[in-house]
Image (cartoon, rainbow, N blue to C red; front, top):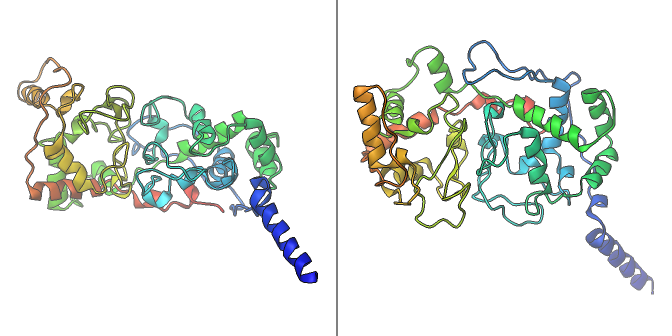
Length: 367
């Protein structure tokens, strides 16, 4: 009889932990934070060449950092924002589709994160241009974090030991609400600036630190390979615009429309594989080979990737002055890059990695 009672108790305990509300079965993790907030000031000494940096509130960014890494922001406490945006990968993910709170895969590849304050739009389909509006979209998404009830989330954070003080420090009040959560997380995301890659340092002085292969690759990037026609700004993309790059003739995911997706930044691109909105390419070489010889003749193919577009660019470079932009949907270009040129282009793309950024303790997991 005693053995039967003992077994029954074990079963009851198992059922409690298996069937009860998930909010009661996870041990609270407590963030380890510095005694004084990190300095999240963004450099404004001229090295930042793609816009005027915002003034960052260190206390709000500190709160935003904790929220970014906290599993409490998912319905079953299984994932955080950082689960899909890993620092050592340039805040991208190393899988084509990330795993959400219900162990279902996301519908698109997780993009890398850096220098977000300069972006005019966000998500692969550019559906929002405001970081604060962005915050609750993945939190509420039924695949990603599955926490659509904002009142329940606020209640959970209010009952979490470390949040009242963090909100007090950030906002002068321990009161928690959706607007403060969004503002603090946006503040942290805006502070995530990486401008210290080999490419940045060379641009600010000279190319003496570049190998011959890296120099050749940069010339190809802006010349024969025409990468710079889309990734032409100092953030190497993400400054606006979308493109159909001829991945398919028929798209299952049409992006913004007609297979057009937001042009991503190439910063830290060597760390952020797999590539494209659906993570179809595992290596940079596969990406280069797509542009080299595999662009598909979609009716909305961006003109920069057509033979007509290449001719127009060549005419402009040779003659200067005004020119007529070709229509989209022309003949797919073939770059005819040699294996040696592909090696050089890949070498240049590797110079875009900012190792200080991906190891910066200010942006690291505090738990």
